[in-house]
Image (tube, rainbow, N blue to C red):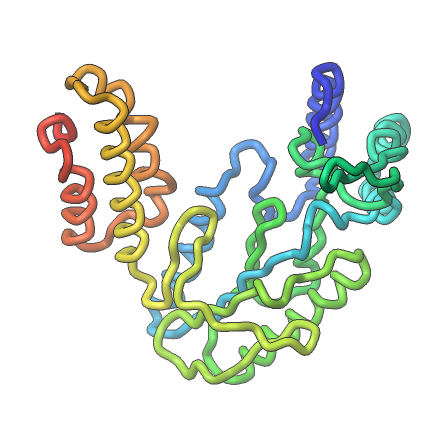
Length: 308
């Protein structure tokens, strides 16, 4: 899916034009935080964490469904994608150029130096391209859904405030609607990778289904780079981030055998601190012991340099 430099220039022009059109006409879902200006992983996490915090403050539980699309970028049907873009009033030369960008593609594979026949590609968007993320168009995924949901490109989750068994039934009904959406647009969910997390104190015997397949319950989920657990505490994330930061400090020491304070100050922000501070506004440790754990782990190998 590598594209030439001239192609990337045109991709960027068309991408900007499409995004401007979608934003100007309020077509993009308010729940979509991917590939949009002034939105990011952090903004999505902040909204999600705030909603869950507000529910937990009422001493009520939350059920979260982490969704996974099967071969997401490889299965987007070209004809249906173009029809959807046209429905969003992306027409004329822009639509024609997108059609040209997607059409007349073929693929081959090599196994033990033997090249297969060339086969036409009727679905999928070029991964690694500039246009790819917005052509994976799941903007309408959450339409008609009564539960809360968040999107970041192809990463999506559904969650609901659980006050009674009726709320679980509503959430299951929303999953059924998503199943119908996936069948309509030929973008299937990977049931074995879709997970359920029961946050807060509650009865966890209820099972959710997609395509009649029961979803497995997870005790730990990496959500846009942040580790989330049912107790809704940051202990697991802090431990993992601190361990990774400590590992990076060890690699720096191994690479720079005679490292001094000046060199460490140059490499530390990008190689160590960036891991510790990613989306910090969302998961900031609630307890002093977690902050001390983070500092202790990162300070273990190079206390004098770290604190400098």
